[in-house]
Amino acid sequence: MSSRPLRPRRGDGSDPADSRGAAKGTAQGAANSGSATRSSSTKSAAPKNSASSANGRVSGTASAKSRSTGALAGTRNLARQRALAENNADALVNLRFRLAAAYSWRILVIGAAVYFAYLLLLRFQLVGVAVFLALVFTALLRPSVNIMSRWVPRSLAVLVSMVGSIAVIGGIFTLVGTTVANESSNLGHEFSGGLDRIERWLEGSPFHVNPSALTDLQGKVSSFISSHRSTLINQALSGASRAVEILTVLALAVFCSIFFTHSGEQMWRWFTVQLPGDTGSTWDRAGRAAWSTFSGYTRGVIIVAATNAVMVGISLYILKVPLALPLTLLEFFASFVPLVGSPVAMAVATVVALAGRGVVTAIIVLVLIVVFGQIEGHVLQPLVMGWAVRLHPVVVAVSVIAGTIAAGLLGAVVAVPVVSIGWSVVRELRTEPEPDAEVDVGAPDEP
Image 1 (cartoon, rainbow, N blue to C red):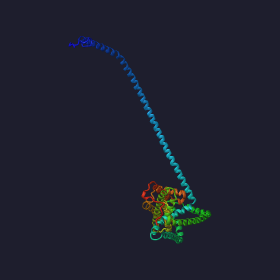
Image 2: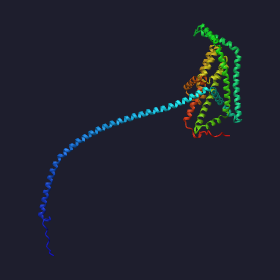
Image 3: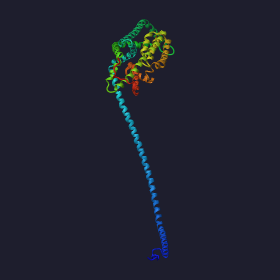
């Protein structure tokens, strides 16, 4: 093999001359490409500026449109909120109307039921009065019967309590009748003299009544009595028939009170068991609350009436007013009508004192009316009946007036206990019963 080095071939770039030529060519190409680039950038600058200005105008228009669209959307949202508020207000008003309508028809149904019961009681008034009196007797006798039944059989305790009560009441009325009969001989002279004193008092200062007016008044009263004598006789006869009705009512009341006192708990338990479902426990709670209020009211009003009667009787006896014992008994029964019964009885006592003892005694009796009224209203009523009757004096006054309008004197007597019972039942049913206090109305009595 030959050791001679190989010579590069022409054109493969290894020759210096060729490399210099290639470098020059490269430089010229770069220069040409730079000039071409500058020319192309110069040519494209104008279209870019025009495009950017066009884009600015488009973006401005778009922003204006977006602002108008936002304002329109805000207006729509405000209108939508107003519409929603109006719909909510309408819904609230409709809800209130629905609630009012729901309460209204229920109140109307309850009112209709109460009115129907009222008409039923008016139709069977004597029976209702007898049951009411039986409940009164039961409330008064039950404590003593419960005490005596610890040592003697309950039947014997009921018999002793009933007979003793009848004996006491009969003795009081017998004493009153005997007193009136003994004083009847002197009453005519005292009252005639009292009427003369009243005439002289009215003719003097400060009234200065014309004597002829008083004489004419006496003549008018006498002529009225003589002209209406038949009517008065008929009323007296009707009063006699009314007395028979009163005796019948009292007999029925005593008969019912015997069973109420002896086995009232068993009778009530039997009634609650007959009720459907779970209503027996509710009725049991309401009935026990009603009985607690009624019995407390009855015992309290008896204590208040007896206290008033004792104070009035002692005062009239000291003042030597005629018919002191009958007026004391009148005060006792009048105290069953709250607020107005005792003042009316004392007003009658004032007239009797004026006719029998004169003006000074009558004025003293008037002062006693105020004093006894304050004692009853501020001491006796809160102390004795505050726990049983939780009614405002305005409610008591309205109840008495409404009861008087509805059923006369009987309505005035029963109005306050009825309202008190209703309020106690409402308060009892508002509270949830305690688990330990629930009563099994179906459980039998303990032996």
